[in-house]
Each structure stands twice: as C-alpha cells, then as structure tokens.
Image (cartoon, rainbow, N blue to C red; front, side, top):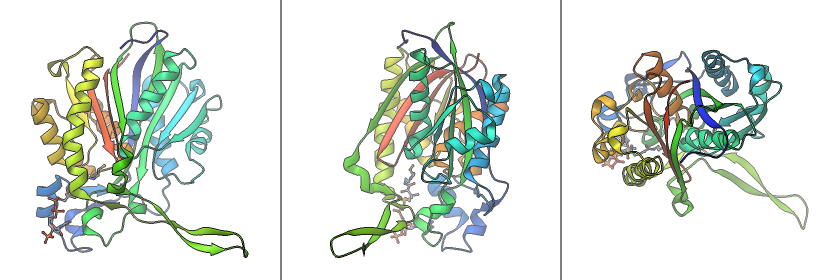
Length: 333
Ligand code: COA
C-alpha cells in the first residue's frame, strides 16, 4: 500500500521510564498476591512508576529528545507532534506543553486518545500527513502514567500497569515508503470491558439546570474479556496489515505487540507461527505501559542492536475502546 505523495521513513527512536521501581514482592505487601502468581499469569516482574513530581510531559520530552537526536534533526524542524496518551497532565491536552518544552516552535501539536492502541494509531495518523505532502517531520510519542489512575487496592488491575514514554520521528522521503501496510479497528459495543471513566454526581445549579460534578474513577477491567478479545483480534489485524503490505508472516523480522501480558504475546505469536526469537518483549521489566509500550520496546531493541536498518517490523496495539490496529514498516533511513 504505497501512497501517492511522499513516502515515510521512521528514522529516530527514544524512550524514558521513571527510575522508581516496584517489583512483585513489593506489590505483595500492598495487595494479596505473589510474585509467582503475577509472573505465571502475566510475565510481569516489576514496573517503573513516576514519582509525584514527575509529569507525563517530562517523560515524553526525555523520550522525544532522544528520538530527535537519533533522527539527526533539530526540534525546530518538526512540523507536527502527536502525543498518544490516556493520562495527560492536563485534560486539555499535553502535546502543546511538550512542544514548548522541546522548543519545537514550528510544530502544531495535539493529543490522540486510543488507550493502548494509541501509538499505532498515532503513527498511522502521522503517515497520512506525510503521504499527502503536508508535513516533512513528525514526532509521534506514546506515553502514559497509569499508576495515577489505578486502584492500588485492586489486585486484578494494579499488578498489570507501569509508567513510561517512547517516541519516534517520521520523515518524508522520496526513496520508497517504509510504512508498508496498516489496519485499524474499533468496537464500541465492548466499551465496558476496560474503562477509566468519568463519574459525576448530579449537582443542581438552579431550579432548572443540573450538571454532573465528579472526577475520573480508577481503571476497571474485565480481564477475561480483554484477554479473549486480544488473542482473537490481534493475529487477525496483523494478517490484514500484512496482506495490505503484500507480505506474509515469514517476511517479518520482528514482532512487537503491545506489552499487556506475556501469555497474550505468546498466544498471538503461536497463532501467527512467528518463532520466539523474532518476538520482542520487555514486559518483565515494565509491565503494561499502555501507549508507551510499543515505542519503548522498539527503542530498547534498537539500542540493543537487535533491530537493524531495513528490518521489517510488525507492531500491533490493542486495548480500551475497544480499539486495535497493526502497522508493518521497515525501520531506519
Ligand atoms: N494475585 C493473586 N490472585 C489474583 C490476582 C492477583 N494479582 N488477581 C486475580 N486473582 C485471583 C482471582 O481473584 C481469581 O480467584 P478466584 O478463582 O478465587 O475467584 C483467580 O486469581 C483467577 O482470576 P482470573 O481473573 O480468572 O485470572 P486470569 O487467569 O484471567 O488472569 C489477568 C487475570 C488479568 C492476568 C488476565 O485476565 C489478563 O491478563 N487479561 C488481559 C488484561 C489486559 O491485558 N488488559 C490490558 C489490555 S490493554
């Protein structure tokens, strides 16, 4: 699926995670759980958690600066910044704050909310602006601090999540489009499976006017439903994206799924018949960092020298909405 205008090259990556770590044994002192239960059911060993003074914007800026440096451009060269997050510092959006902190004065910046699919949706959105020839340099950030929105007394959810940020720089190129295929879906009929929902109480302003007054409530999840959904839909969407790319599973060098649960990753890889050595996972270290998980895993694999320029990568995000999507691209200049 090659566009009519410019092609897209994904040429820089960066990531950041808070220094503070909570391992499973620490967690077992907060709720009734065990390292053994968490590891066998999820593959998670620990999670990095933002301290009270760390903002989502700061983590995003750290990841973005590394991605910009690797791309060999200056922040000023950016035309667009897309921040995929469900946990902005400010409900009006945090992308503009990040634009200011980076000094990306030329760039327009906005938030995109699609939960754990956010990075994939952000990358695909970025590619549309590049293919149409509108923008040259686009920064896509996936970042979340779900530790602020988890009920730390609910063992069914709090064991899963961690905080982090990852970013990539996409650039227009005339030398072949490296975004080879993609596919995205939403199913609002399953919206109640995973929520971080606003809950307000009626508040009367006068005899005729009432509003709701309240705040967002911690994450609620039907774990089994989400698990079933992921194992069914993720292989499907990757196959569709591969079909759009005119590729087959064997052409994929690396599979990077949203890091939600090692059992989901293993089940998807096995359904697609992707061998284990091609599957990237850093879940043991970070847990589920929502929109950050794919770019964080991508960046680590690049830094470790696993992923090399020209490698074909399949990424797939899935989560609340419900939403899911996949993109197939070749890494590097
Ligand atoms: N520690 C110990 N026991 C726990 C526990 C924990 N942290 N959390 C739940 N349990 C208990 C349950 O209470 C239940 O006990 P019961 O049988 O006495 O009622 C038992 O373990 C089994 O719970 P269940 O919910 O059936 O476990 P599961 O095998 O489905 O695993 C998840 C639970 C959450 C790990 C799993 O469903 C999952 O990963 N789902 C996908 C979630 C996800 O990825 N969400 C984010 C998507 S972006």
